[in-house]
Amino acid sequence: MPRLSYEQETERQERMKETEKRLNAEGYRYVAGVDEAGRGPLAGPVYAAAVILPPDVRLDGINDSKKLSPKKREELFKEITEKAISYAVFSVDEKKIDEINILKATHMAMNGAVSSLSEKPDYVIIDGNSISGMDIPHETVVKGDAKSISIAAASILAKVSRDRYITKMAEIYPQYSFEKHKGYGTKEHIDAILKHGASPIHRKTFLTKILERNQ
Image (cartoon, rainbow, N blue to C red; front, side, top):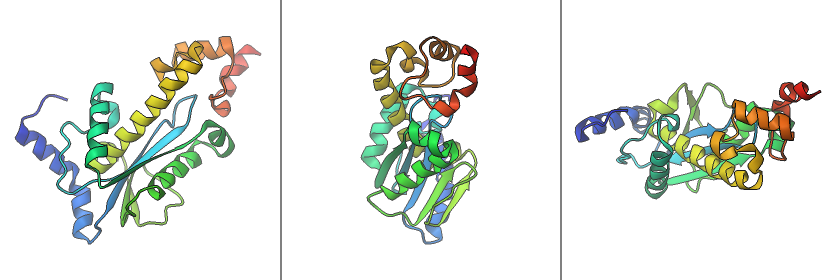
């Protein structure tokens, strides 16, 4: 994203607050944004985060986590956790993903993040197009991580938390080079699985077709 002037960045962030401002105007005081990281990888947990931000918050450069550099995500992680009214991160591990499927595990992580907030939200806005089990008033927003400041904040917390975890796993299972691909199905990763087999943190239900190549 090109560098914006202070005024341009202010205007951009105000556009990202439109959903939150609408809900505040309807009487919802604490609006939580929710997003996940790690639905697609072949290994590791799926993470979700929930964030309630103050209405006047300023987070320069905030955007969908996938559009930010790792360095910028880390900077914003620190700033978000310092400025948020409340935030929480929740993960569901690969064994549970294999047991119940990735969609249900993602919804479990999202509900877990919301339930873990120190301040109970009045309303929840969720990135994506579906959620189940949410007993708080809510709505889903397709591509919400680029449209809502609180969903964008949640996307950053979830992404950074997951990347930190998978980088630690790279030290335990160096043969898979998790630090490079974060568990996604790159050629290098698939070649390592074919050579070494699955690690304890691989999602076995994601590997069926890959492991069939060795049979």
